[in-house]
Amino acid sequence: MKTDARVVVVGGGVVGASVLYHLTKAGWTDVVLVERTELTAGSTWHSAGGMHTLNGDPNVAALRRYTIDQYAEIEEVSGQDCGIHLTGGVMLADTEQRMDWLRMAHARGRYLGMETELLSVAEAKQLIPLIDERCFVGAMYDPHEGHVDPAGVTHAYAKAARLAGAEVYRNTWVREINRARDGGWNVHTYDTASGDESGVIHCEHVVNAGGLWAREVGRMVGLDLPVLAMEHQYLLTEDVEAVAQHNREHGEMMHCIDFGGEIYLRQEGGGLLLGTYERNGEPWSPHQTPWDFSMRLLAPDLDRIAPSLEVGFEHFPAIREAGIKQVVNGPFTFAPDGNPLLGPLLGLPGYWSACAVMAGLSQGGGVGVALANWITDGDPGFDVWGMDVARFGDFATPQYTNVKVQENYSRRFRIRFPTSATCINSC
Picture 1 (cartoon, rainbow, N blue to C red):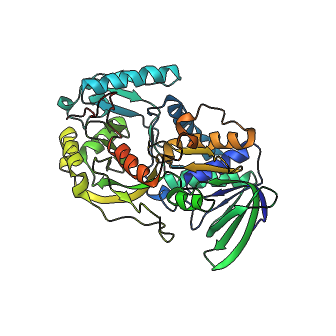
Picture 2 (picture 1 turned 30 degrees about the vertical axis):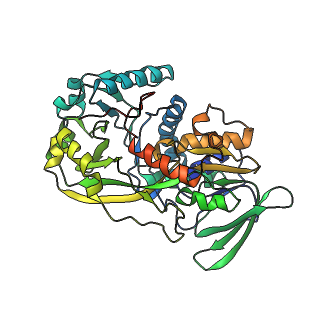
Picture 3 (picture 1 turned 90 degrees about the vertical axis):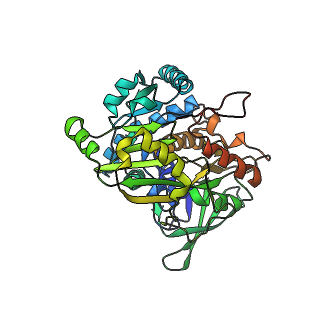
């Protein structure tokens, strides 16, 4: 193992691997990634893999577009299949208020060079034949949506970085991070395979891309980052004849977001993948993430998402008759407002945050390039205020974080109207 490096990235999910790759792309090749177990362990491995550009912050949306466009590049550079399915996507509006919101998103996206189109319900039905037209008033189409293989993407980033000179150490647990006498950092590691101390890596910069363990990696340097994991469920259905018919006539079915049902939907094999951000979300391990939690799932809880599923069955009648093949329930981390925690930390020069990236397959590339630019050039190169960790101060206590993350999770697909305590959402 190296004893000196310019940057040590702590965490081997898609975000950490993206940061590593973008550092090498910026010309810094003396960089290292350390992962406690295997790449993708934590949240990445069980992700649904969806990628889409829509975001309340237009600059975050632009970085999502960068992420999606980059997959073909890392696939070519690394030779690693990323499982790219660029199907396009449709966002369905069930109310006139939501349709107005989509018109706003469309206008703003055009300003940023995005290629969305507004659709009538009939036009949406042609693209997503599973919908019941009576439940919707309009839609928006985005050609830059789809899904990828989370493991393939992560390994492609890591492989491309290694080809440029970076090093990746698996089964390497970071147990301690402290200041070196020269102002840099000492990263103390432990070999989880052999049970031996691996040694100390001295570096100029440390990147906390710890994912589910971001709080623990932050606490090593006296930080209590505003991060909380939420249980998130999606289900996989048995084969659906309507999907097979669509495949025969038009090819793979598009992605779909149903704001009224608070549901996302896509094809998976011959069936469907359906996930929801339910209103009664459940925090996971709110105080400390167990170090022995790795490639594990949580017990399914279909009762908690039953109200959303009922709406889904009404809006997509073909699902009602489909058998459930598997329910996936796994934790993802969120910041209080749902956007990543990115950038330098006040009072800790050389320590950087790349945490709370709940949509890693949509945002990982943008987070990686912005942070790599910030480290190597002193500026992210984009307006990243919506993701800057500095937007939260001492007010973001664990109690505040717990309340706001749950609130944000429950309102992920709802409009927040100014001066109103309620959000409009109807079937």
